[in-house]
Length: 195
Picture 1 (cartoon, helix red, strand yellow):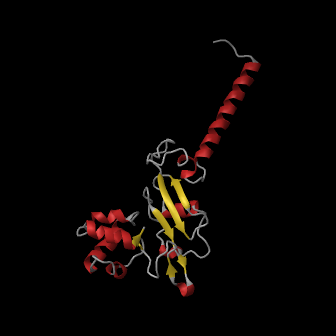
Picture 2 (cartoon, helix red, strand yellow):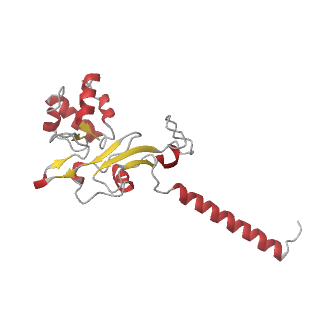
Picture 3 (cartoon, helix red, strand yellow):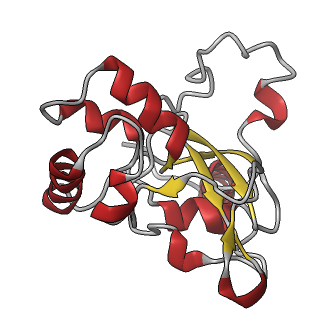
């Protein structure tokens, strides 16, 4: 193997450093906190395939309510509700984080609603509606679940037990796995519960 001249070593070293810098910059750009739809939606990917960027294992979630920057964001698979709230600019001063299960895993297409604390500690949902808003799936008690049409005390207890057994719930759709919850009950649950 021929010996390399000093000039060749310097040139090869400079090329290696340049490649490392470009690679590091590309990695940092992928980890940025840009909203998920910033470029993809405008480019016409609204048809549902969000794997164009090569990140098909990510989840896309809608962060709403009492957060700094509500919007739609892409997060790595396995992320938690707490990660989504942070990506959405963090909780606003009027946020009631006690009403949200920050440890729940995110599911693709999930909406994370951070409710506001109203006067005298009353919780109101930022998603609107009347005085009665959706119940937080991660914090709902047996008594609260029992108030939902189609849910009795036994099913309410089964939901709480299922939630505890699975370390929380990422979406209402997971409740379909509980015996006694059929399609009509699922519709009622979707209307009255939030993840």
